[in-house]
Image (cartoon, rainbow, N blue to C red; front, side, top):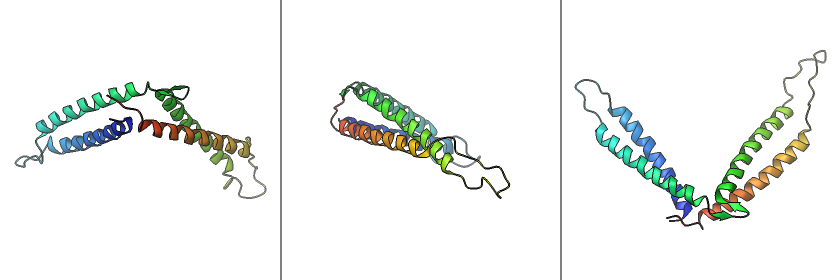
Amino acid sequence: MKLGEALLLRADINKRIHQIQERISASVVVQEGDAAPDDPNALLTELSDLFQQLHEIIAKINAANSAPLGAGTLGHVLLERNILSKRIRAFQDVVAKARDTSGNRYSHSEIKNVRTVNVTELQAKVDTMSARHRQLDTELQMANWAVDIT
């Protein structure tokens, strides 16, 4: 199995866990005289099986993350991409706030707000980080379909 397949399987298992949890919630308490839509005990058994499958697939994915990629490992590239995503969002928030000058003044007699950051420079940093993020994402996507897991 390729890493990409394992990642898709993990997502599918998580989705199924959520669905089973909803079905259990709808079945554990019913009005007296009514029947539960599903057998909650059977669903709990199925839920336990799904959690075991999730445990196994995540263990395999984590082991695959030690595969070499570039100058580091797949895990290191994932970490770099995830931190870069957070940095990009933070910088984008600053840029958006600095660009928003609407509603600052109602008349010329009110105090004028001024920017304390260079929006152009910040946007250039965001663009550079975004380009690196795309590069890392491409490397990861290629690795997902090249790395075998057992």
